[in-house]
Image (cartoon, rainbow, N blue to C red):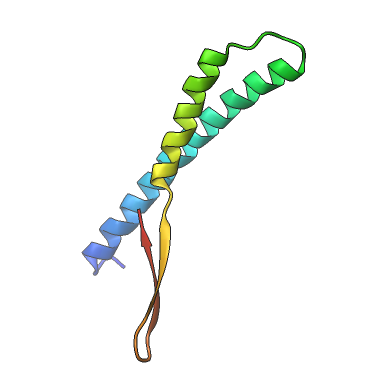
Length: 82
């Protein structure tokens, strides 16, 4: 893989994007879950903070890849875009 520098750069970029998506999605999801758990438990959650956490969670979606199927005469490939 190290001979193909373009592919290596794409893989490293994908790993970075995956890390950020995982961090933001986990943090935002946990904080939203905490607010919902507080409401279910009879407490008084801070819904303004919950909206902020929802924003954190939604930013993680921009890092998620999309897959495309590429078919030529005898070749088949899958490409991933970020």
